[in-house]
Image: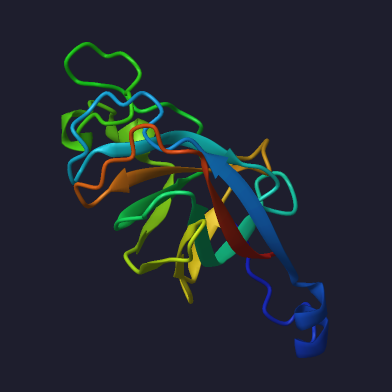
Length: 178
């Protein structure tokens, strides 16, 4: 268990120790096009967020997220986890394909125990060449695995938007690191 020492640093020292970082992660929207583009479908597979925390096994606070894509963006739920474990289909235990209904996955509680939390982006606008959506003030505390500085993210679409043939999108994540 982590030990919290509230009096180890003065308020000024605490503020000066915090690092703020923006990390861009490229995701492949509906790369497999295996589904019917329905709410609850896996939109993109588990993807690494490199150097999301400052030290191996460290913590960070996810404060903001922006998604920029070349197609209209419907509501999406994003799940942050400290595990790179792929999601699997209940029907055959194989790695899940984008477009598969998340409700049909058979991951165990132990496999999903590394989940840090989730947030949704439901607002977006068409900026001509790209569509942009964002979420502010998330405040999600995230912890990496003991031998890693990485976190991981996957997405679940919450609309019937058709992402088949869509170009990659970029998620820009704003972290406050310990």
